[in-house]
Image 1 (cartoon, one colour):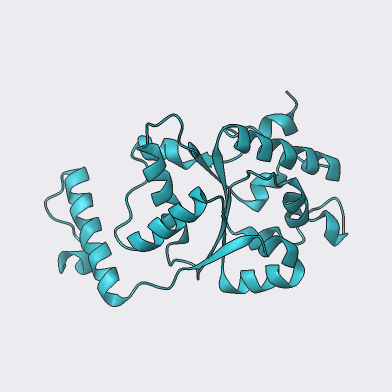
Image 2: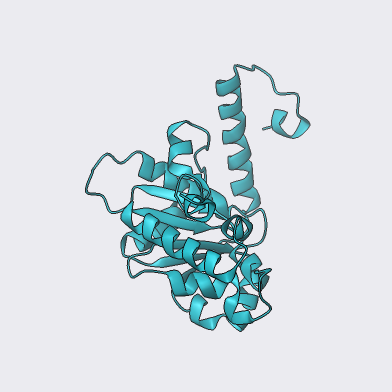
Length: 219
C-alpha cells in the first residue's frame, strides 16, 4: 500500500478508543451519564453527532464513555464495533494533492463502514480552510469529508460554540446533517463528585494511601 492508502486504515488514521478501553487506558465517566446514554441511542439510530462545548467541559469524555461501552459488548451482530478518534491535522497527513486527500477520505469512510467503526473528528472546526494544496474553499477538508461520507457512515464531531458558528457559516450543508448535543460546564456539585471519584480511583489504582494535594486531600 502507498502512504496515503496506508494512512486511511483504521489502525493508522487515529486512536481506536475501544481498544484503549480494553487496555484500561481510558477511564470511566463519573457524570453526564444521561448525556452519554442519549448520544449512544442517537448513534444506534444512524444519527451523526455534533458535540458542542467550551474547552474542558468533557466533550471527549463523552465519546470515550461510548467507546468503553462498545468495548464491553460481545454480540457479533451489534452495529458498532469500534470508535476511531482523529483530528483535522491527522486527516491531511501525507496528502500533497487534492486527489490524495479525496482518495484518503473516501477510503477511510469505506474502511469505517466496512468495520462498523464510528469516526470521531475532534475539533472539527479546525478543518475549515485546511488544505495547503489549494485556496479554493471547495477543496478544504470539511467539504471533501462531507463529499466522502457514505449512507452508513457514523460520524461524531466535537466543536466549540464558536467553532460551530464558523462551520454553520461556511459549511451549512455539512452541519445540517448532525444532531447537535450541547455539553455545559459541570456544576460545583458535579465537579466535587468527579474529583472525589478520581481521588478514590487514583488511590486504588496506585496503592497510595494519601495524596499530597491540597484540593484532593480535603474531599
